[in-house]
Length: 165
Image (cartoon, rainbow, N blue to C red; front, side):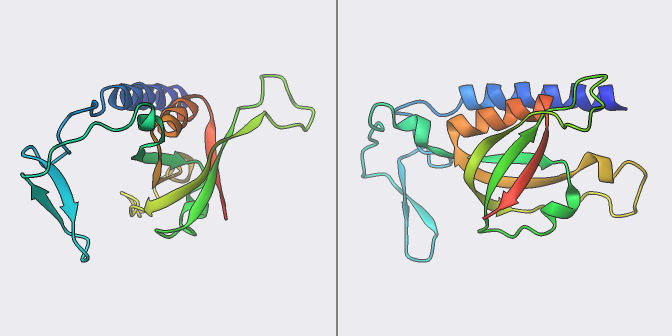
């Protein structure tokens, strides 16, 4: 079971990294608006603007561009405390080395700071099936593109946790 989860996590990390790498390029039309850039009105609705020229972002601005990153957090109960709009730090806890029974845990590092929670999807199964608690829970975060790549990589090798601001 554990090797299957690790293989799945690795596959998700590779897929996420590929998606980040193949994201929109400078000069590409806005996503969903092939005819031009998007304009957002006061109600939050976007409208195509065919008469406005597309401008390439300033050099180096792609690194700070926000993307949506689905992240599986190891403790499902913690995720149930989160609401859209919350800010969290994401921590990757490396597994303890084999034979490391001295009471010390594995290494932990902060992978994302101040990530914005945009969505907390409902769990797929609420029947209390065995192993459901082991799978954690999904949370969708808005983070810079470079942070999304770090989150994907960390999720392949570590258990992720969040701290609420």
